Image 1 (cartoon, rainbow, N blue to C red):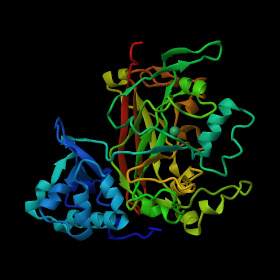
Image 2: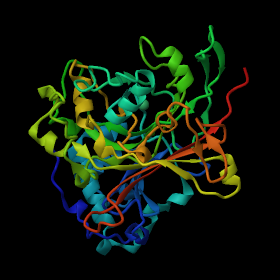
Image 3: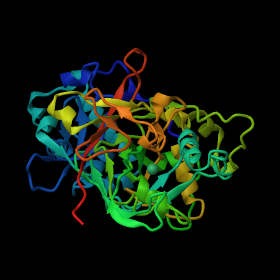
Image 4: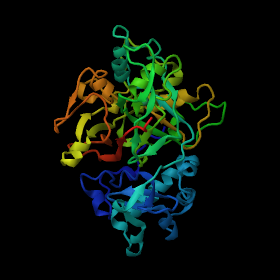
Length: 443
Ligand code: CA
């Protein structure tokens, strides 16, 4: 289990990139998130980079200056080609050496004037999909979310009997995953309203978001092999923010008996920066403490190390900004602040469970945690829960109200570890996952 802190996590480490040292910076030198960028408007294939302050470090230019050696150099060479999958395949020794050498290059006393061209301002680039995602699975790991949603359908029996024994998931669709900023088109589908006899084809009227953590798989496993709970660490490359767009009216009609289909696969949005598993080490915590009345997980889903360090203390925030709010210069309104620490199943349990039948995961495969919801009213990760299925309204400072999303609404998700009021731990950010709803196609 990769639980050891190293020099790259030192909270006193500063960078010669001044903006990385600002207290509000999402990308201090302790973060070093990976991404793929293009110059704005460029038709070129994307290039690998690492975020630092308000700049990116271009890995190709580090290679040109012969700054990287050994495994870090191999890792950077593998990052050519516009996607990070080959880097993900290399494994932890390579990722870790690259992180260490980039950290050494960026730290305060290391600047050499001739190397300033390795940086480009983030403002001058557009971030691309960081990997070609082969397969995508979405879990359902928040017991608060599962209970809240279950209550809408089964008030007396919200949680199904398998929930506390098995991490529940469905196979999602990777072809419709887009990076932050790409607009999301309202889907069309079969909808059967409660009072109608027959379904009709129409634009979704109950469009929703789901606030989730996304996880990128590293080397993965061969078909027929199992990744055990204590091996999972070597197989997680890193994490991002995920918005699992959901058409609640289409979902309600189609989901039985085989689960989500067209209500989910029309669009998924992710944040472009991958926060590496190594960068997240300082924010690991105890996995969810089950009340004594809950069953213990089966032994393949736990280990002493996992119990101690399987949790992740990540703060999420989801906000909406309507078209009117943008026109009137009103800032986005925060709808929920879900805490990842409350998740019933950990990202390690999800991955080991995924392989327990021998299912193979490949480099760049991706899985979502499921909607993150805390136990409090202001910690909910979907509108379905906030408005109790459309029974209540959200009122905006612009005077508008919503049960579900309308065209022109922008959903903005953020995530970070650490907090402003605790100087003992560095705050690192995930960047943003945002997208504006555009109207459905004409029928
Ligand atoms: Ca979901």
